[in-house]
Image (cartoon, rainbow, N blue to C red):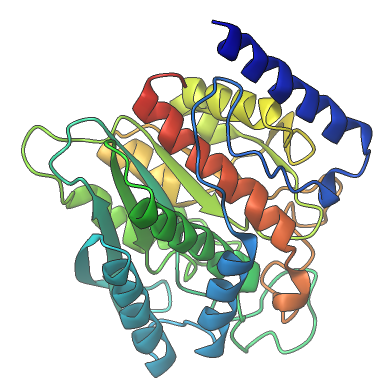
Length: 333
């Protein structure tokens, strides 16, 4: 009992000391325990950043291009190297342009036989045109997608690396959706977006009787000064998940990223997972206030490059995801 109180006292002291430093961006949060004293591995921001850089080295990951195919295979091989059971879910889909796109959802499973499980997801393709209303240059050229796509994937790759080094009894699915970003901007059909998540939701890979309790989607989670508000569809379909994730983020000192504001609806992959698969899924997505488009200034522009990325943002999101996993396993979330 004395050790328990001493441990809590020391942890609270460390948290108070960190708060006094004022600059949360510089705060490493070297402690790897949540307030409930559940040991959580430390998320390595440098490793995640390296995974992001490697994706960009392939070039824009636009469907039906050699860069897209090569990057997809590299991603699957990375998950395999990190001890996951990997499923390559190949499919074809018709784009709003009339083109037939070849896609592959990459599914990395840990403890695939466990009934208690959660799913973390991101999209790994990048936008085929830089058609943001705020952009007037190179509008017909593809976007590099450092934040819009590669950041969420980088976080999940580092989560996978940590799960290999720190096994946990919870079932975890890391799903990379393809063909998310080939939708018609300003169009009337929301189904032109999230083609990979629509396919996955209609063709779930789980064996009979096994489904995840809930899911978390990561989209644009690496930007400088990111603000993650509570997105409309997330609240409509999975409000309890939103609350526990945001509360955990605040308790970990990430309240400057995970703000309590409600933000507008986004037709993102989570929308289709909720409405087609019936799996409650929330969207962690950067929606800065006062933005012309509702998204970061680099969204769907030639500026979505490494210059838009802050490794501290990657670490805040990644450390939170690890805490979710290990706290869920311990039953303390």
